[in-house]
Length: 116
Image (cartoon, rainbow, N blue to C red; front, side, top):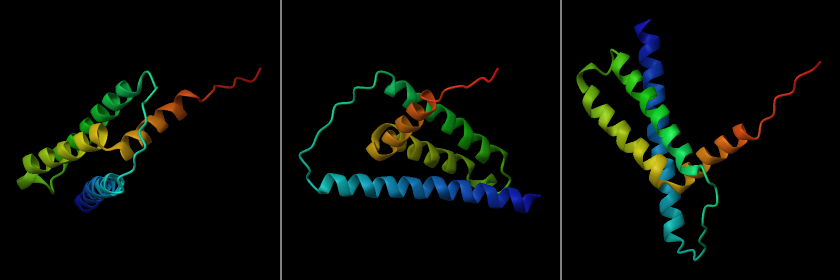
């Protein structure tokens, strides 16, 4: 059972790290293209979506690191690194923010169909 827990913990930490690196590279490429395009967000609840997603992801990753036996010696360092990654992804990365808002808008537009 510990092997499965270790593998899952490592996979999730790797996914977070790769998402952070990929988003950082995407944002740097966008910045260095020196594009003159700007956009003003017209979505009313977009900041709330970012806060909700940040809180959910924070709870999720802290729980994974806290429960995992594999990270015993480095729990504090890993939690701090995860928080830095999540703050950047949810609040500073335009690529990741647009993905989060897109997911919430897609969920919001779903309709329930009841058959009689």
